[in-house]
Length: 601
Image 1 (cartoon, helix red, strand yellow):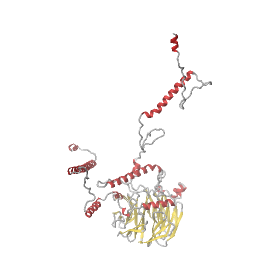
Image 2 (cartoon, rainbow, N blue to C red):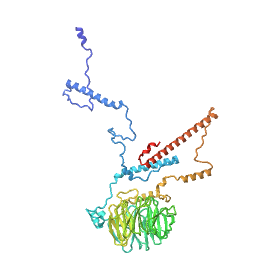
Image 3 (spheres, helix red, strand yellow):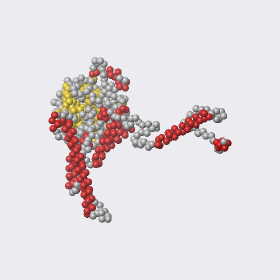
Image 4 (cartoon, rainbow, N blue to C red):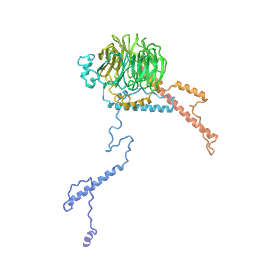
């Protein structure tokens, strides 16, 4: 028993287990005693808690390594919290905003086009789509919206006076209504700059002045001592053209004469094409002339053979010039042709004035028959016609589609001109002191400029101007440095006059007839077809591999591959034609099924 008792005694003393070091994730709930030792029960609990904490920490460290890491996409954003975006991708754009910034229709790539042309058209299409989407996304940054004048209950807006509007609005807007009493040299023709900041006035008796109409600062004032028929700003507010009694003159913003163009004589009306740098003039001798102001060269001189040309307007969409004639017709002209593109019979009497909207879709005309007509230029058909008791001598359209018509000394502004019903009731009306000679809406401002026999009047027309402007194209607040940079870029991007035509979208299409004629001439000159693919010539191989039999086998193999590609292409074209025919049939049927459709195969 003693031996057994001796055996039970351990030969090695049990060492006390070391307490593991505490980690930052452990929370010490027990406090050590002053002697430095913890109670046994609390000590065991702390050891168990430490082991559990170590196990959980190891699991946390090993958990991402156990399984394969999820692959991250290239465009997927990485977050610090490693959370996924609940709404991945860009925010969807409403269809209405995309249609607002759409520029023309997409042209189909022709089948005969080469590989390089297809790639070029594809890249240009992708760039235009990107620009459209970006413009639609940044539409949120344009918070300004156009407003209109609204009367009280039962009050008609056309009876509201300009003095009442100027008193009701703020001081800055009220200062836009003013009158310049210039009774000695009238009547006056006027023109606003492209940015809408500067005003150019030209009196019939030789008085020419240009001012910053918002600050009322005078830039220059000269008397040319000669009859002035028309004035027009050029590409910037640093130069302007004056059509005097005999010749055409170019002045700078200080009133210094820069050029006297003697080839342009008896000029009555002028229009400036800003993207082509062309000054178009209509003369009393019936000539339509184009002057390139960037190089000072006459581009075209077209005899219209229509008599005196005193009615002229440009289409801002395609840069085509519209001329009104004494026989009631309106003709459309391009510098590339010596015959009119289109001739329209608009009135029974002579045409007095013309106006076109900024989209180039609608045209408004007035004639001696005292009728006001609205035409759709896409179909060359009148939308509606209205009768004015005294007729309209001057017309002008604003950026938002308001029409101003001058009858004697009264100016009337009409709303909803493109509607189905003819205009009957004016939106606003204003009476001036003398006979109205010129009308022009100021760009990006709710202001209508009126030139008359007693000077100039500025009229407030709420809702006339575009509230948001493109600072890269026309910035009213640009400095001299920005103007210089814009002028250089505009000259580099200048369009050639050969591109002016009725349909600007024709530039992206292929002239198939011209291509075929040039290709035929090239074949006759060279003696072979350069577009025909070269015949397959097998290479010479070593070690008896270039025997006659192996060469023929290789030739047949290549021929079979080419033949298979041709057959595949023809089958695809046939299927595409069948699909187009089926779609046309469905459109013709209108989706309505008849009882006889069961007998169709």
